[in-house]
Image (cartoon, rainbow, N blue to C red; front, side, top):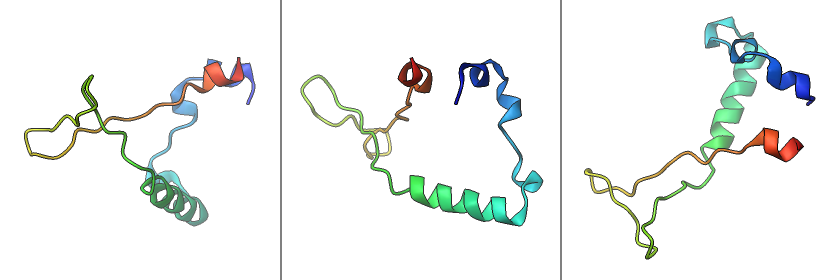
Length: 72
């Protein structure tokens, strides 16, 4: 990855599933299955207690990685 990569709009990197070839669909499905194995990022209050949703399940949030920061 190079700095110029980040100057491109996201439309250069996003595709509809119908635009993917059979091998790309298979790779995408493998990636989805792999990511599904990641542990949930659970929300906690300042005392470390889980925050629960109205459905009684623990609240979760996406955990994003700032790749720009990683590259310096």
